[in-house]
Length: 73
Image (cartoon, rainbow, N blue to C red; front, side, top):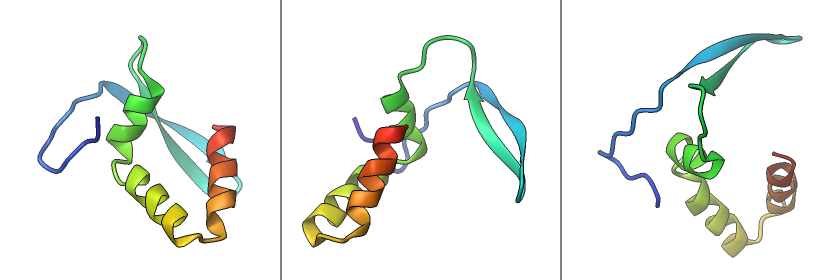
């Protein structure tokens, strides 16, 4: 299922602040319990699937790098 404009889904949780060399990084942490990572990814980045299809269609060199980073997650 892909999130669309106008659809609202509430995911309880909070942000944790992590110190990195460049400053502070705010990381979203869902409430305790099981959250389907793929579903959470669709909610936070609904544009990603369409962008990946576009990159594959266009054959951009960034595609290989993006796929490599995605597999590391």
